[in-house]
Length: 355
Image (cartoon, rainbow, N blue to C red; front, side, top):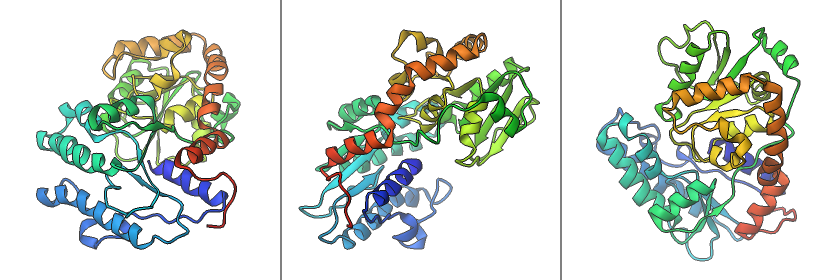
């Protein structure tokens, strides 16, 4: 969602529109800005609702006749802005879908909060009466099943000049990699992301160098593996080198509505070995690509088979991704195509404006 909002804000600026962003840090009182599950549990539950209240209130106070669109996300968007305000809610997944996917890994009260408070109250009411947008077909199905809404699938915009196929050996030289076989994982070690599958592959293929670009901590012992090279808080500029240096990327998430990392890797021509989620189910509709798709995050044998398949002929797989997936990516996510679809859906004229 953070990456999406950066793209959208910069895209509106490029089209001559002013943009204001409201979030907990610039709206509500200090007390409600940094609460987490380690704080008072009642405050933890109340905080998500209050943050939506303060953000919505600030947005309403900022309204003026020149405002063309209010775009809200996640559990923020339920605050009434008044009649005549064009308001779109973008669903980057649903907390109910996430709650079901990670239920074994969280406390029961956390599961109930995600499912009923965050999803069925805050998310559902954030979409009521507004234009409903979402990031993928599987999420559109979730929104209809859980909330009864019909949402328009937008996908996400990405810079396909930044994420493109580069010379693999040159990228490896820049990163200082000498291994003949290389994999990459970009994300976090959160249980929802299925990081255990990445560590499993690193152990099963000791001759492989696994590049791990993560935010946050790694599990104990992971960094001790001799064939794992960690890039903490990798910058946006280094990501194309990481993807292009690898023979394959991994995205073993338990729940991922439409992860940027899959689109970015595929845009670079790098095959992504993935569990079934919003991006893999979108891209891997061609039978030739099905060997890259496992049955689940826990299908470790499937990840092993896919790695062996790709490493048996890396150039073939890169060419296949370039030929079968890149055109699909350009149609869905190239900025000129994405913005035309987005502006038509929310009813904003394409031409530039000074508003």
